[in-house]
Image (cartoon, rainbow, N blue to C red):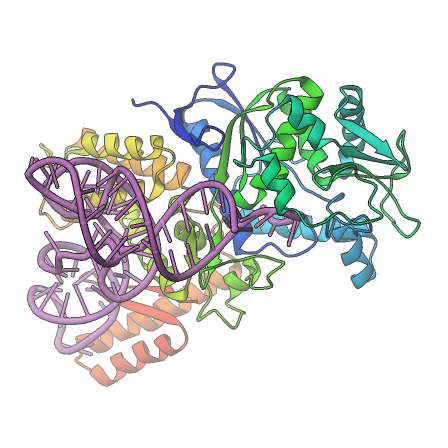
Length: 491
RNA sequence: GGUCGGUUAGCCGAGUGGUUAGGCAACGGUCUGCAAAACCGUCUACGGCGGUUCGAAUCCGCCACCGACCUCCA
């Protein structure tokens, strides 16, 4: 099989993936700040790196996948009087900050489960790793790259840049950063506008605070990822992922902190997913143009023509390459919905078609193409295109226009199970197990449709059409087949 | 302003220096009492202008437009 190749943002090249420790992979992905409902934008990194996680597992690696929950230390802006996002939300909703954290963590996890995103191996919270973050800050001070002022500790970017390459991930030059940064606040304690806080002293009104050697306060945002990633994955680990918007300053800061703490780069492969746009513009909380996942799944947003199932969203996202921008539109979503349906229908057909003596299909060729596509930096659009070629194969066997022998049929079944179900995750295991109500509904609809079959036998088209049309109005789509009928709930 | 990326048929979205990506829609057909659904088939595009080349949508240059980052953001 071909090598697994991934694009490394650090080198701006596609590189063959080789883990640090053979057979094992450590990966860390920046998770959400839990101060609001997850929106469509959040689903992209989650799904992208879920795909990577699933594929690495499929390849036989033992993967430790860390995705954090940011529940503290994320300032609303970088001014010194910056307020914590969680604390602000808590104030607005008159809740204990940890109630906010718990509420949105729960809803994030639920949304992820709906999208068939597997839970990571470890999901650490920033508030649960204050001790580790303090230790990291101490290391930065000890190595001379951080300094304390009035109980707060800042990373000394200028000093760091004089020894190491600051900006190598984002392609920034320190002099450009200076000329492009707005003027320093007169009363700022920072030595330079480029410095970032690794520990902040809390003002009296701050609720979220912890003791530290410098002050009662809270850690800076960038620090949590350094502390938690290296705690669970070691001082050097394989893959770090996240949204493109985190590249600077967040990930750049992580590299600097890692260098300051350990003297070497913490990450071997940096991976960044592109953003989801809406009307060509980034979908973001600060822009207020986002659609939450709950809204998407229920159709309750003015921009939505209908509800879209979580797996449709997943398919929509994976039909584009993760490094390309993806624009939201009802048209595109509905196209995805239809396409997915066609793919899944073919997958279930696989259990029904019969094998023959000989095969007219090139199944192993198809398999090779599928692996070549995903091995090429997770090229899911090409992978899905190949899977659709296979759909045509499956349908022609079903139509009797092609044949497949039993070995090829088994291969085909394994291929589709591996890719469609296990790797791409297009079939949720959490499909309803059939509640009592659903059982009753099924029986009632079947009863009506059997009556319709009788009416059709008697050429009583009026009754037959009345049953069909009434069911359609109720949201039940009736499909006639040679053998009788099938139906499904269209909601 | 700086840095980076993009501009592909009605829509979404891959990709390679020369051979049809794929999906959706549309159109034609099969099926059907009629439909719907399903299936099959058709639909040859790459921002503009130059250049390199036997040949460029694919490489180079210029221009236009769009976006991201440069402040929190997935």
